View 1 (tube, rainbow, N blue to C red):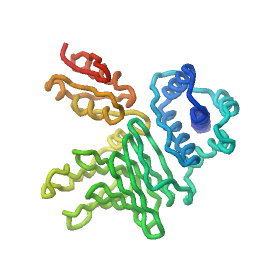
View 2 (cartoon, helix red, strand yellow):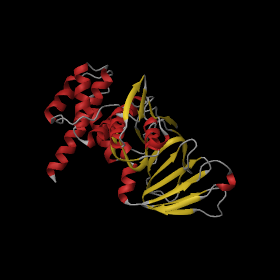
View 3 (spheres, one colour):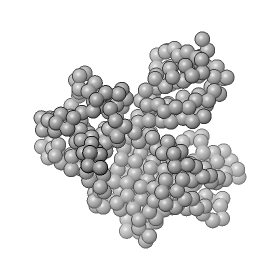
View 4 (tube, helix red, strand yellow):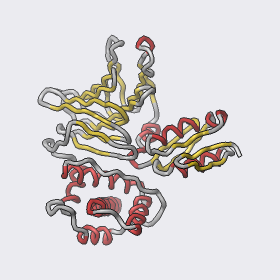
Length: 336
């Protein structure tokens, strides 16, 4: 047990060191390579680095930095290296020291003070992950290209998911239910953990990781209750009369797979090649084009790094007996 805690502590310290170094200014080629190597050494590194950046951004009231690093497997940064990095890199502002950043990372893991708050409108760009504390003690983690609007006061806890995908870890407060609005769908919780996904032209989805939520749509006479390991889907926005809520049970493993984006990963299990290519476009300006329709319908299964579309394209092409060619920012998968 002790060794596990020490390992996590080393990862957090290294994450704080890297966040402080990136905040100081552009990395050299060698430093960039070292950062990419470190992030590839352990799945937890990317999450720890994102947390450190979120702390740094909140301290400065600025947009969090993006994390777009490769996932090559290399040895992790040692504790001594991390400590040396923290002490040797000078922050841009005197009050933003590495020690404060390390403390901030710990605060993020253990729980943010209820009065520490950021702007009510928050967005992420393509490829960016952002974790934020909410003023009630809850937290929200935003996936790529996501936007939310928030309203918190003595009477309400309200978040509108304008677009994208977000994970909500809700602090219990029976007097102020936590509500998330996604289009016409309203998700109500008292204290739980769930994700909401709202993509243009696709069904709104709610996945409950812990606890119970109530989901309401204007066409429903009463709320639909969903418990942990359940998925609720609202049919796509193409005719109000046809919109219905569908609830299904999923495994804990399936829920975990839907949250792999927090670690910079995406998992496909029986998805079509076209669906997988579209998922990668959420995280990058580059495009993966499946040329032949019969290839687009081929199923693909596997675990891939979000920021490595070329690696995915090559692996997918090999699995279906196709090839990959590059055309500018496009990767085309086609028959040989």
